[in-house]
Length: 306
Image 1 (cartoon, rainbow, N blue to C red):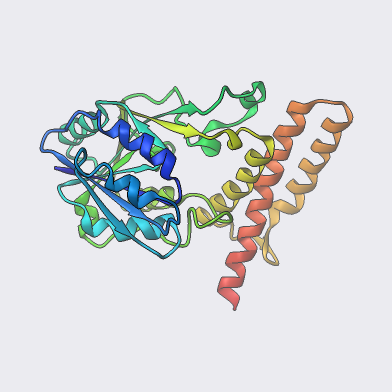
Image 2: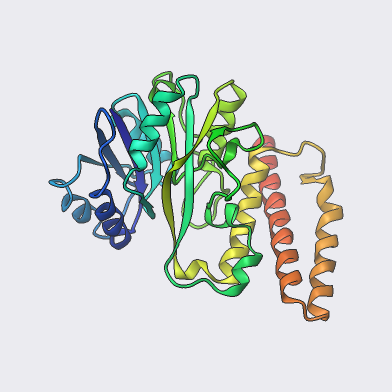
């Protein structure tokens, strides 16, 4: 048996569509259950979930402490079986998703973590400039070059939130998600599941990419604006720094930022002057990522010195 664990907050309409897709899932060998943790929704989430109780093996719980990782930690004690499959409330599974993850877990007992394909599901046709964007950190989309097989230390982080499975024995040993990182309202450092994957990898746990285990991550219309994408860069920078703090500081700021921030500010100015929107956007993305590093470095510095 395996358990699918999902946190949700105020996405009742989309969640209804996602759960409708779950009704078409092929049951994996040994069966499955779905645990949905409502992280303080104020919409009709509870009614949506209740409407699927006769069609899905669903268990609904509430965690009022804000934060995706807090919600996932609250849901772990309700998981059953030997495999916990994590996903998001805006992610649509392919029909054989769970069956493929189960098959991989059985075929590779020496591996503890499993990830699969995450493809985009666009709410509206994306604009042409979306080709300038790194879809990985921006939309949590896996690259096409990933193929079936063991993941190296440099590619292990492609096991990510919308499509990952971890053996339940790991959580039975007391491992939990770090609640200081990941979605908590609108302002947060990204990397909620990545922190756990890196921690387990450093402790010798191995990961496997399951190419046939596929889901589609819903990309909302408001996410297809340059302003949204550039704000995402700041959160990505914050998370990147929290996951790998740069100890070479001048004051509370990483030393390289004194060089790199002016460098990319100049690139933005030059691209604006020569009317090159792509170069300007790409430089702005890196500039915002660096700003995120600076924000998180100061935050961690304050945590340590107050």
